Amino acid sequence: MSEQTMGSWPGPEPARRRRRAFLALFLLPPGLYILIFFILPLGIMGTYSFGEVDPSYQIHLTGTLKQYLRFVTTPVYPALLGKSLAMAAGVTVLSLLLGYPIAYALARIVARRWREVLLALLLLPSWTNLLIRTYAWIIILGQNGLVNYALLRLGLIQEPLSLIFNTTAVVIALLCVYLPWMVLPIYTSLEKIDPYLLEAGANLGASAVQLFRRIVLPLSMPGVLAGCLVVFIPAIGTYLTPMILGGTRGIMYANAINNQFTILDWPFGSAMAMILLIIVLGGMVLYFRFFRIEDVFGL
Picture 1 (cartoon, rainbow, N blue to C red):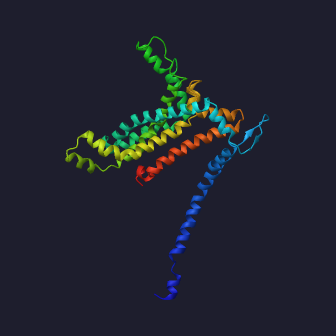
Picture 2 (cartoon, rainbow, N blue to C red):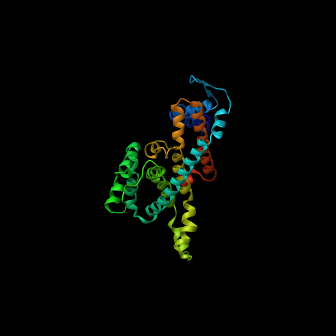
Picture 3 (cartoon, helix red, strand yellow):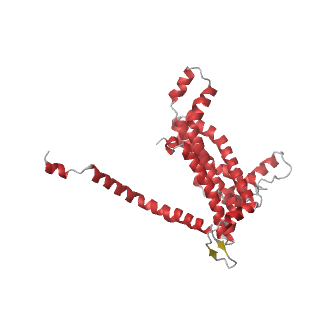
C-alpha cells in the first residue's frame, strides 16, 4: 500500500472524534431537558431553602440554616416525615409480599406464551389516570361503597365501616398503584435464572425449599431491591392519594410541603423538599453502591 493511500485512510482518532460528536448531538436534547426542567428547578429550590420570607412575602437569600433548624425544632414536621417513611415502608413490604409470588408464578410456573398477556393485564390499570383511580377507591371503600354494601348484605357487619379518610385507605390505594412496579424487576431477575442451576441442585439432593433459599432468592435479590427502591421512593413523596383518601388523619409529608408553598412560605417549603430529596438520593446511593442496573435488567 502506497504512502498516499495510507494517508487517505481515516485513522482511529478522527473516527473516535466523530462518534463523540454524534453522541454529544444525540444526548443534547435530553440533556437540555433535564437541565432546564430538573436540575435548574432543584438548584433554585435549594437556594431558596437558605433564605427567609418577610411579612410582604418577599424572599431574602440570607444564606443561613434557619429553615432547616425550624424543621428540626418543630416536632410536627419530623413526625410527618417519620409517618410518611413508615407508610412508604409498609406499602413497600406489602408490595413485596404480594409481588414476589406473582413474579415467581409468571417467571417459573406460567407457560411462556401467556406471560406477555398476563404482564400486560398487570400493567393495564397503570394506563388509567391516577386521579380517576384514586376517586374510584371512594366508590369502593366509601360508606355506601361496594365493600360496605357487600358486607352488609352478607350480614357480616351491622353498620358501614369507616374505610376511607384514614391511612389505611391511602395504603390500600398506593398498594394497587405500585404493585406492578414491584413485580416487573423481580420477574426480570427470576426469568434470568438458568434452569440448569435448579436442575443441578435437585440432582444433588436439594429440596424445593433449599433450592429457593440457596439459588432462587439470592439470584433474585437485585430485582427485589430494585422493586423496593422503585416503590419506596415515590411512596414517600406521594401527594394526590393522601389528599383525596387520607382526610385529616391521612395527611403526609408531601402535603405539608405543598401547604408551605400554598401560603407562600417558599424557603421553608424548599427546605422540607430538600430534606426529602436527600433521603431519596441516599437510598439510591446505597442501592447502586452494591448493585448495578445491569444486574436487574440483564444488560
